[in-house]
Structure formats: C-alpha cells, structure tokens
Image (tube, rainbow, N blue to C red):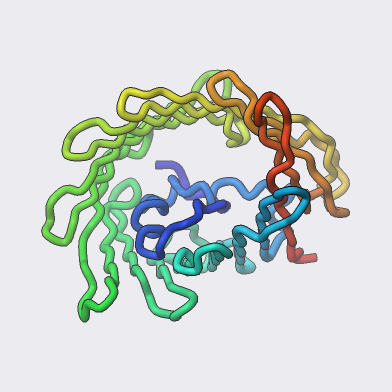
Length: 300
C-alpha cells in the first residue's frame, strides 16, 4: 500500500461511540478520509484545525458537528476530537501513537469516550513485509468486565492489491474487503474496493483521484443499485512563501448527472478558507442549508 497520508473527516452524525468506531472508521489507515485531505494551502504551517458545522433553517443557524485536529511539530496527527451537538453518545476522541517520532506508521490507536474518559477501543498494529499485517482490537462493551478481543488481518502486495478480513471474537469472518490501486497514464489514480459480507458481494466502490489527490468521481454499486458522484473544482491563485500557484477548490458536486451541492467561501490572510456556505438543489432551486466555519492555529 502507499505511504500513509494525513488528515480530515467530517463524520456522520447520530452514531454511538461503538458504532462510530466499528462501522465508520476504517481499520486500514489509508482508507481514512479524515487523514487524506485537510484542504489547506500549506499544511506545514498549521498546528491545529477546528471545524464547526451549522445547519441553516429559515436564516437561523443551529450547531450540528464540531471536529478538532491537532498535529505535533513533526506533522503527525496526534489527536482527533469529534462532537455531535445533537447526540452526545456520538462524541469521540481518537489518539494516535506512532512507531517513532518522525514516522507516519501507526503503532496504536485509542478511541475514547470524551464524556466518560473511558477507552472504547484500543487498536495495536503489527507490520509485515509490505505494510500492515494485522490489527489486534480490544472493544470495551458496556457492563462487561473484559473487552471483546478480535483481529483484522491483511494480505496482498506492495503495489496495487490488499485484502482486509475482519474477524469476530469467536474467530469467524465478519466481512472481507479487497482493495486495488491503479495509477493511470494521465496522472489520475483509481481506487477500487469490493466489500463481501457472508462471502456475498455487498458493495463495489470506485474512487477516481487526480494527480493532486483530489476526488474527481466516485462510483458505487450497492446491492445492484448504482450511484455516481462527480466533483467539480475552480482554480484560484494562492501564494506560498512568495510563490504563486494554482489551487483547486471544490465548487460543485453532481450526483447521477444532476447538481446537488455548490459552495461559496471566505478566506483568511494566508489564503485558507474560514467559512464555507453550502447550497443544496431543492425543487430546482439552490437553497442555503449549511455553514462551515474553520479556525486554524498557525505555526508562524
């Protein structure tokens, strides 16, 4: 697999801590959207990022979600905090421990309930010849003295293929996912995954990325139903250390050939966006439905 990248997630709401960790956070680090794209002009200048999402109804703002990410001086993501203003059971704090001070290779992860400060899950990583070989998971279930212990195992190669198998504490297969990565001649990358439950193909997911790692298209087939999402960007000039270059900014999303969302931005002095308005297409008209605010703590 490719080297672990860093950062960003806007998590789904209305999840318990256990469901959040079990069903949303992928075990394999390279599958974590919240570590892949932070949408910053110059990530190396940022120490922390706080993202607050608000729904907008009849011109009134209502807080929905908040995420907070912290990086150390070696640019390792050390802490990810998530708050759901509508469901405190979904709050979670993820703490990352690395193999060494300069590595992106994870040694372990703690998933903590910030309301009780108790550990929900503990993951221990073991590496093999090409990347992660297995993950030992301890899941702490309410009112149970000892945690459930199970493993997630990997097989594949260093180039383009990995298979993940998740076992339950009784050592039976829960699910199996196969991943392929294909580098195209035009600089794009295709990430293909197939999820099998009870040895039956449940979902096929194809993600096309451009040369900068930006999403171009996502094709999903779930139980025979297909869905296509396309991402459209605008180019704006940005300045980094006195040099000007083109930066791609997400402008609009289409699903199955129809516009579903578009975005408007405000920026700080360093060129990073601090506010983003989301408009959704409803009954043939754009409707302002969500506001996202960001606060960056800079190193300089």
